[in-house]
Image 1 (cartoon, rainbow, N blue to C red):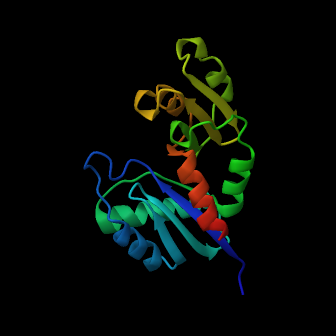
Image 2 (cartoon, rainbow, N blue to C red; image 1 turned 90 degrees about the vertical axis):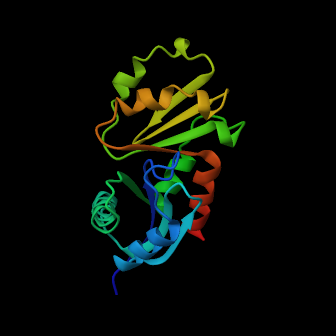
Length: 179
């Protein structure tokens, strides 16, 4: 029997402002149709946890993106992490989380230009902080995510897709992945 792995899929930019609508029941059905098991979704913003044979998360992400395109007619960039990778991302967080709703983890599918990000003058964003750890960028926003400027800047320094989740969502997804 092949080794089974828990995965977390993070879909970028769906169900935001009434655009690119995907019902979570449709997403669960689509993932089940791909042969993934134990599929669960969390909130309406495109988070899914499932089990499948051990594969490269980037390949899983591309398979999901292609299936959404073919089945739902939408091009939805997707980032996938294994449960173990998500645990490592949580454990590697170097910033204090005072308010989980104002703390964002940016999950990047490609290489992060850490040198380019280090060149950003953070003094221009005094109510925001940022730390880069591997393929994740942690951002703190004292005035809330509505006024956040750093996530858009980070996206310009990543070779691939970037999608963010607040700390509360990250911890809940980890709980689902490990549960």
